[in-house]
Length: 279
Image 1: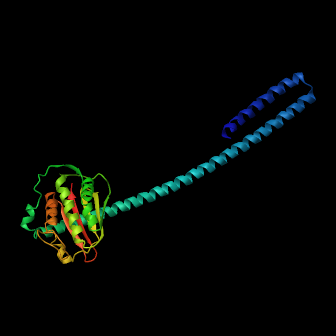
Image 2 (image 1 turned 135 degrees about the vertical axis):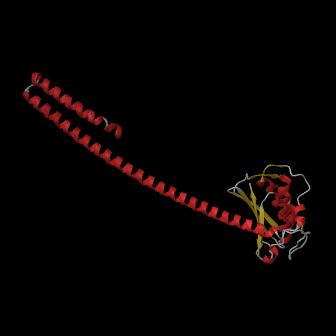
Image 3 (image 1 turned 180 degrees about the vertical axis):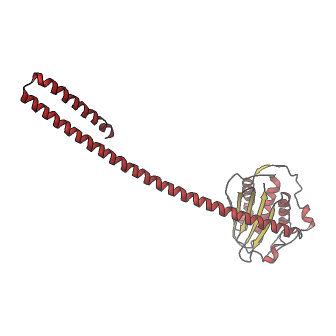
């Protein structure tokens, strides 16, 4: 429509020039009545073309206005949706930062409180293997340790799930130290859950810190016992086996990397162990 509309003004101008030329020639070559009829016919055609040009231009303007209005409405909807998404993302990010600051503050406070009750032997609980440190993927170490302990988890009827914000979570450490850290805490959960259930391991990085959370839905422990579970040779009231070395060694590894650890639990509601490792 737009392409043909561009030709209409040119056609109208052509007819105008043709009318002038015919008027000039007809005076010399045609009878007066014929000249009058011809001029009248050309004038009518020119008028009709002019009306057609005006209507076409009006339709084009109306159509363009409607398209522009649709584009504006669509743009406003997309802009509103984008703003809503940005608000949600911003609010979620702010909540994560608030939780991160709370957890970090709590971990530091628990670490300071626990340093006075730490047994001297825990300083010697590091593995005997040499700590060859390099950049390791914590997700890979966790997944491999879970596969290694799968026969034991099936025997205890415990399902282990690994959840991570990313499958590449790098940390400069000894592969063996971190494997023992995961193994000891998982093994401790399998022994002390005292019933079939689930163990969920969550890995995440917030700011400069890495957080590792072990959460099970086992029998749990009274709060009065939680401050002692990382001490050497301590066994909780729900012990079924073990010698109280696993969590003490895990804490020694966490201390070696200047991290912090604390546990939360209530009888019948499982146990959660929080670990923070600075990059």
